[in-house]
Image (cartoon, rainbow, N blue to C red; front, side, top):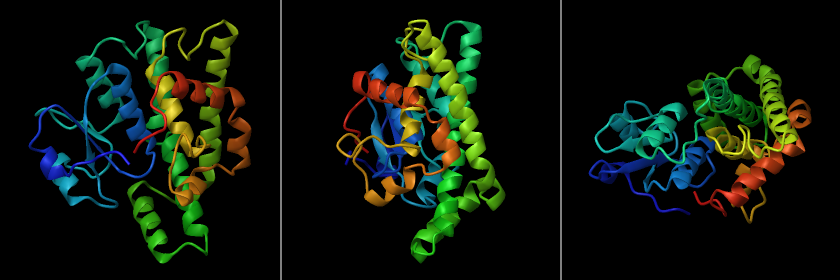
Length: 258
C-alpha cells in the first residue's frame, strides 16, 4: 500500500497534497494521481478515513475525496478543477486539446465519466443498490452503503436508470475512439494523449478491473466492481478495454499502488 500521512500533518506542509481513500482504486483519485505522473508533479498522499471525515470537513469544508491542495490555495475538489491546476503548474505536456471544438468535446466526455450523474456516479449507484439488495451483506456493509446512498442521491429509480445512462456514455466513447483509430490515430484526440485517455483508463476499473497482479485489491471490492449488467456489458467494447490496457502499459504506473 502507498504511504499516507494524516490531515493534521498535511496542513503543515507546502506543495501538492492529495487526499485519497487508501486501500482501493478510487477512479477519481487514480485519475488525479495519473495526471501528476504524466506531468511529473510530486505530491504527498493524505489519508481520508472511511465514511464522514471530520478532519477533512474542517480543512476543505466538504468530506469527499480526492482533494488536491496546492500550497495555501483553495482546495480543489472536482476533477476539472484538479486538471486545470495541474495544467497551470506544468503546462507541458498539455492534456487538453488546443483546438477549441476538440477541447469542448473532451471536457464534455470527461464530465460524462467523472462528473455528477456521469459513469462513475451511476456505477456507484449500481453498487450501492446491489449491496442494499443482497440479503447476505452484513449490517456493517449495509450501513456503509446507506451512508453513501444518502450522500450521493441513491434511490431505486436512480439505480434502474443507471445502466442505460452508463451504456450511452460507453457507446459515445467507443464511437469516438474507433473513429480516431480508423484514421490511424492512437488516442481519443489524435496522436497526443489527453485527459480523456487517462480518465477512461482509471474509470474502467468500475466495470472490469485489470487482473490482480496489475491491480491488487480486496477480493470483495473486486467482486463489487465487476459489471454484471447486460446493457452495460453490451456497450463495453473490446476496443475500449484494449485502449485502457495500452494506456496503463505505456504511460501509467503498474501495478497500481493505492
